[in-house]
View (cartoon, rainbow, N blue to C red):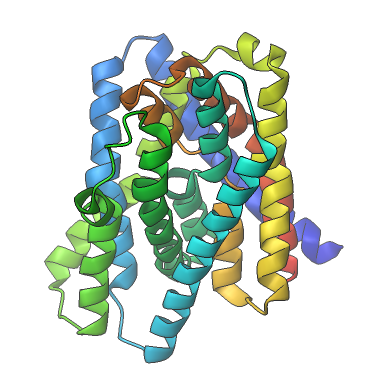
Length: 311
């Protein structure tokens, strides 16, 4: 019990820091410091520059074949976890309105593994957490840009091999792996610059989520019973089943906690971005992302602390 309480306190403190940063983004919206165009630019910066810098920085280390093997296993676990979530979402979620059904399923399948998981993995597990976290994100991106696009695109023409392979998440993992496997020398100045950019990964994504918090329709979320059901699946039932299954298969240590953190995060910010791009229910997606992020301050510390106890 003492170990659980210590882990719970550690995770809670770090999650609370994330929510304080979200409060800054919330205030930036309310006081008109940032507008929608500014938030979009910050989102692009986080997605295309900051997050890749975090992933690459995690690979700047001496090559270790054993570490590489653990990375590939974590990648495989990520893909299998998403297959499990896809099957569960298609079996458990139905709605008469196709636009709503797609949003509900997408929110349950895809977690905020990049924006919320990596800062927490970095704070709790250090550079190793980021290293294995990038493996989970690689699997996330593979599924997102294949199944995710095919599911959300009504025309069924949105998927392409180019999108699946050449996106910021996959490209940065490939660059990082080349640096790691070939032991490529990284000049101190370059390493320092990458570190400074990577350091923005905690603040910017959390402030972006906070910004969109300020525009969310919480009244709609509170009265939408199906949203509660989806939040229960996304934040409690499916992460717990997935994490327990992974542990029973013998997966443990830093990479196990890394996967647990990623699986326990709220609905992905991509839920809203994809809903807007493919003309799904954008208002519903914004409510689910915002509401699930708010509720995760209660669920994530418990799930992650328990995972740390059994790692």
